[in-house]
Length: 129
Image 1: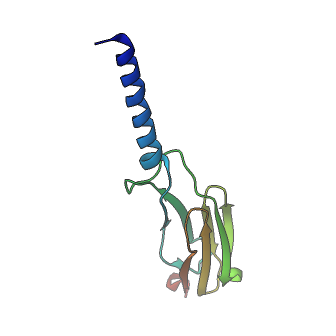
Image 2: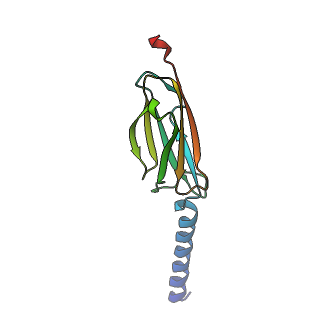
Image 3: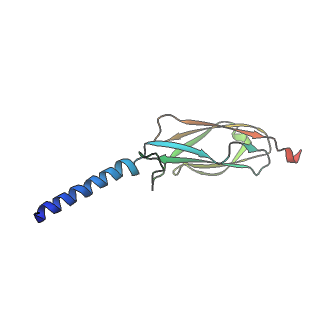
């Protein structure tokens, strides 16, 4: 085989591999939200972490990528305290105060078509009654 042909074929193969990696591994196709807990307890210690996870074309987490997400409180903002809020990475950690109720949070991620709404109940802590 000619040396130039080998070089051309290897460059073409590397370009195809890079293109496939970019399109299916590193590109974000969807945003999935994960919650650490489904409920909070009104004990001034219970926390929930909401994490925006970028999903690639293979259906797994996209490596080295973050999803900027804007979190807004629709209802019950006075019932919780924001422990940390990193909208560039798509992470929100909230802590319940001492009042039971319901918190509704709307998360609008950069790579999703529609916002996601989370309804987190804050239950009365029966250990302190």
